[in-house]
Amino acid sequence: MAVIAHSEEVFTPRQQQVLTAALDLLVEQGDRLTMTSVARRASCSKETLYKWFGDRDGLLTATVQWQAAKVKAPHVDRYRLDAASLRQSIEQFARDLLGTIVGEVSVTLNRLAVTHAAGEDSGLGAIVLENGPLAIRKRLKPVLEAGRDARLLRFDSSEEAYRSFFGLVVRDVQIRLLLGEDIHPSETEVGKEAARATEQFFAIYGASASH
Image 1: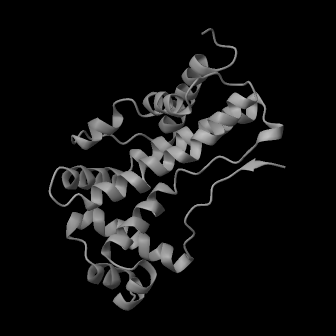
Image 2: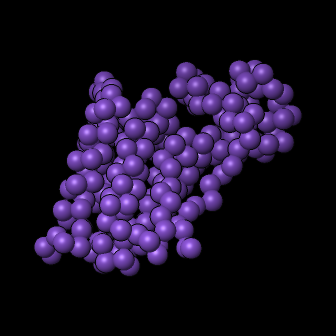
């Protein structure tokens, strides 16, 4: 059985507690976050942090990976893929993606990343880009390609199809959040938006759609 899955960074429960503390501090302190403040908040030693993550950039990288892991990779069996399971997988991904993006942690990380990307120290911007949006994209593209191989989807480029999917899911919500608009969609509203985006995606790229 060929199942599409993705090996994601695996953190122990204790490491997850530390990364959650780091995320909380990023929301509170922004780029003033230090190894000392994380160690204090997580009740662990700095030596432990350096052993696990290497340095501050390593900790930030792991923190972004942990946040991005909320957008889970769909598990799809290439040989038993049907329209219903494909649609369900894509809609769940859309729900995870939108729910994560509208969260306070993601908004804070993206604001910090934009600020750093525009300055001389672009480290955080590169970390967020590589371990956030680009890593998340890699989780869905093989599923889209499996749908194409099963003749359930039609597109020439999985990159183009993913960008269309992202645009349908996120629309202008992310930029509005980054600019300070107070948007707090409920879980139900996120689910409805994910279903709408999935329906529109299949209307464009579904095998039965007119091209």
